[in-house]
Structures are given as C-alpha cells and as structure tokens.
Image (cartoon, rainbow, N blue to C red; front, side, top):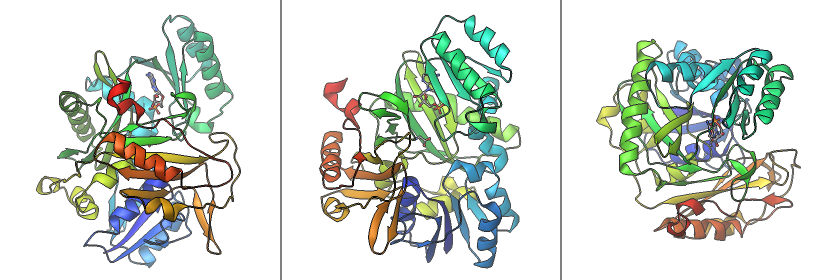
Length: 425
Ligand code: AMP
Ligand code: GLY
C-alpha cells in the first residue's frame, strides 16, 4: 500500500517507524515529517494544516491510505475530505473530532452520558465568568474551549488567578478564536493517566496505559508543555480502574457519539485524573498522545497498519492486539527556554551512541537534516525511549541514552517515570 502519514512531531516519527515495519506497506510518505522520519519514509514538504495541498498530493500520487497524527487537520475535516476522494483515512471525521476541538461540546456529551468528570460551567462573557468565579471557594481550572496546543489550561488555586486567566482568554484573546468560550471547572486531585483506545465505531480496544509529564520542571513544577516525557504502563491504572474507565467512560462516549450521528473512528484518548473517588475525565483527545505514542508504540507488537485498516473497515473485532510485556520510558529532550522562546538550528550529536544501547530508540520531534547535519528545529526536539525488564530499568536506560546526546542548550526533566517506581508511592 501507498500510505501518507500527516504530521511532524515525535508521535509521527513513532508512527512512521511502526508503520514502516508493516508487511502491508509498500511506500510511506510523511507530510511534512522531520529529521527522524526521513530515513524510514519520504518527507513531503506540505504543512499538516494545508488541507487543499494534502488533498492534491493524495489524489495526484494515488495514495491508498492516509493516517492523520495531529488534532488540527482532524478538526479541520481532513479525514472527511480524503473519504470524499473514495480513499480511507485513519482518524475521526470533523464532527467526531469536536470531542477534542471543543471542550464545551466534550463536557456536554459527558454530562448527557453520565461520564465522570469535573463539575463545570461554560462562559463566553468575561463579566459572567468573573461573578461565577468570585462566588466559588474551591480551587478552579480555567480552559480555552478550542485547540491551544495543550497550553490553554490554567490551574488556579486562588480565585483572583482564575479571574485573571478568564480575562486573558476571553478579553485579551491570548489563544485567538480558541478562546471565544471558556470552561471553568473544579480542580481535581490525584494522579493523571492517559488511556488510549482504538475505536471503530462498534468495537473498543483499550491500549496499554501510560502517563505523561506536562509541566516543564522536575516535581511537576512550572508551566505546562506539550509533554516532557511518558511511560507505559502506568501502575496507578490498576486492572480494576482500567475496567471502570472502559465501562464508565469509553463505552458511553462511543455510544453517545453514535447516537449523535458522529460515529467515532480512530484513537480515542481519555486524559484521566485518578481521584480518591475514582477515575474522572480531564479531557478527550482524538489522536495518539505525544509523547505517550512513543512508549506505547515501542510496546505494540501487532502490525499497526493492519490495526488501522481494521478500524476504518469496522472489523476491529477480528484483530488481536499484542503487547511487549516490558515497560517503556520516554524522556523528552527540549530546547532550553521551551515552552517560552528558544533558539533553533543547534547541531545535535550522539544519537548513534544512544541507539547502540540495548532497548533504546530515539524518536525525533523538532529536528531537521541539513548538509548531513542534524539540527534542532522546535521546542520538543527528541523523545529518547527505552524498553526494560522493569520501569526502573527502562528509566535507567532512557537516561543513559539521554546522557549520550548533546546540543547547545539541551534540557530535559530528570524525574520521568519517577512516580511509577515503588519507592515513590
Ligand atoms: P487538559 O488539556 O484539559 O487535559 O488540561 C491540561 C492539564 O491541565 C491536565 O493534564 C492537568 O494537568 C491539568 N488539568 C486540567 N483540568 C484539570 C482539573 N479539572 N483539575 C486538575 N488539573 C487539571
Ligand atoms: N501528551 C498530551 C497530548 O498529546 O495531548
């Protein structure tokens, strides 16, 4: 098959790497890809949100299958447009992608289907938001309703901070049109976990659990980022909790979307808070997580292309998902300054040495190749990922690999997967 993968992050390198192993694959193209996808695929210089450009390429080059990595093209209807050409595409259609692209819609469907989540209110006028926030005594979270690259959320222990956040989003429009409405909700306490599932509209196959590390600093300090590291499985998600998430979250949401006529196909990602009162949904994403995809795909033994095709053809029930029992840990190496401003164009050294270590794979995110040199080109640069016999071994190998890699200004958290170690609980 001729397959086009859309996206350019660490998640897309992991997807490209896994797709390139498929026995069904003949040619793999990535638009636009990065320095890591180049050796396993053909990079095509079309931006992931250039829907007309992508459609022209898919039609002209006669692709057989399209895999969409990030949320923006899903929300913009890329899957619908590919299907209009009579070609299959992996990912939800626009109407179903609203589960991530519109947090107010996600809250509505959760309430309608009794899915456990934080109590919330939606506002489009600052004055209303302000008087509501002022009337509350507990800590609140203020979120832009639209897509803001994982950065549109303010966790506020103090009501005055929540009012300030509402003002920035609604009045100052710091996230542009993504901030036309806000969701204000109670702050939940617990450990976070990412639960991803393949969904074909009828069958739900839950993947192995994982945990992301959103804040920039060790000990979960500082501003939120796209994700500074992840590991799988997450011990906080016991079998009982996983069954509860399946029963109380995934099944009702997939049924609820069906009843709305927005049949869900693709990866459904529940960002969960495991609270003392059970698991509650923080958000839904309509795609693989980044960096969760890196450890999860390291552990997936099944043919990914076969699974994705089965999702599109609604025959997921005929597939078996096989997993490597070994845990995996991914440490994100970022440009110094991220998630604020940072320098790009720094030369990266040491990836070969890192990958020579047992069980290690280095996924690229913000990298590009120029004259045989590998340069940084983004905030999150690499996802250094390792398998090990235990979380502790995977973590040790990942950091050993990180220590082989250098560039001017490289930064990473030093405590990825720490919460999963027995001594930490
Ligand atoms: P979201 O994009 O909605 O998942 O929010 C990003 C991050 O903000 C989450 O991963 C949490 O760390 C934090 N967060 C979001 N909502 C809440 C909440 N209700 N209570 C506590 N933390 C939250
Ligand atoms: N790692 C969080 C996300 O992909 O949204």
